[in-house]
Length: 361
Image (cartoon, rainbow, N blue to C red; front, side):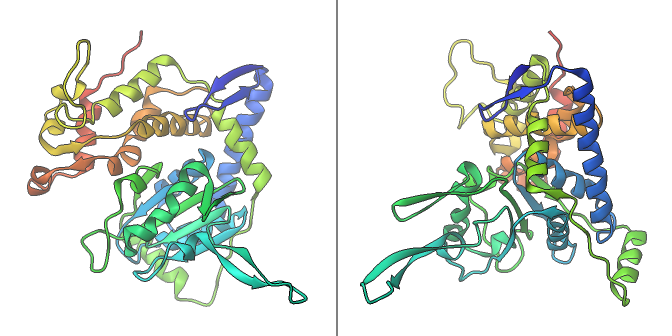
């Protein structure tokens, strides 16, 4: 057996037997096809979105779905949850929602036999395996922050007690465009905990016609569960065991480093410091804050999942480049010039992919 270390620092044993490797890769690919088929019973099109949702699930990450109302973001999350034999909870985020409505709270309970009172913890909906945070930006940041500890440490602290969440724990949050009425910006610390920011776009005319035909009749189709909790945990371990070369890791690191402007967050330069962003004009001109090291972790881990789903037991440069947009777009904070020139984070990422070259030692 050989040992690899994942981006979170935990070690995973990967089998050295080629036959066993091929069996594991084939098992994961079959699971993806079964999930795709079940989700496709309800969701028309949006295959890229479904694939990224599946990648996030296999990587033990969390996913933010961004798009205007009516594009089926909530339906996609609910449908995916129906294909998994997991505990599912949905929270509708509203302006009056409180943090305790998510995490739970201590209540005073009268003991039997008149023996006085005691505090009893009543768990909130966050104690689940699959949490749908619907319209997460319609509640103030105080309530949004109730997800922070759970998403990173898989723990919830209430009062003086910390409770551990049962694995797997997966958060899918939906978000409407921030310019819409009654929305609040997500705090940067909250956004950074999402592995992917997936843009849900309008369907094509043909897809929209299929949606109309499928939702205005009497027939209804329900997806069936194809993976249990134990199955999912095993598949997640397979993904984390995929090896990755130092060249690919360095490419991911250089991409992330190139998002950071040389003035501001990086501070004064020191002897030997490299400033890759100095060669990228769009970063200097439009970016205030770049991506954190979580972005590099997400790129490599998601690259492992993408590679194995394509039948490869190694990560290539193309895997990193293909995932740059959903991993980086929500981690770049643009300045006033970017908004004035109608530049968004995807434009900056396009420039990064052109300028940061693949290098083999």
